[in-house]
Length: 252
Image (cartoon, rainbow, N blue to C red; front, side):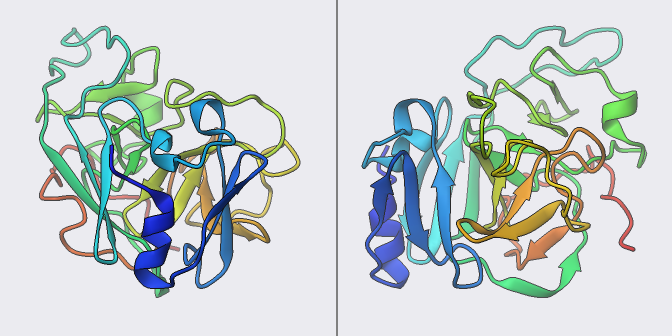
């Protein structure tokens, strides 16, 4: 994979990225704040953050965009599909997702569309909390042991946190697990205190001094994102948007 983080930062600000104790420090991922992307596993202490993307995902930079390509097939065995509760099969895809390298905070939070709203570091897209009928998908749908399932287009995806995406040591701040299409990072369940954060906004995000604004997965709804806090390009999902997932939770 040709995704080299220092080049990403240089594209816009010529800011040097460095790895400090297993954490990648960069600029421009949160309204100008410096952001630390915590890494574990192969990426820890490595000067090649391309290892943040695994399995089906490959990432490159094009101008001020991060372009992630994926065939949509996870790097683990998918089980139970098709089945009585979900007749859909998992099919190979040809994803090209476009994510801004410098997220721009929107004047107002944006509603989540149907279909992909972001991509995990393993190349699998994630959706809003609802199914096609506007119901809480986590409560009414059937998932495999990695908390994913296919939609009628054969797109395997998540509506909730999956511990199959990346290893979480369970201590301190959870690692990066993906990016929303507005460019803000999505982390696991815990904040820097090793506990679920208590100050998340309605989009499921908050700000800390090291990472700037970012989202967190949560055990309860909205699970991943409740809304977009940043601006999203119309073609961010590469045309993969589909009526397979219902609209996101209503805006307060």
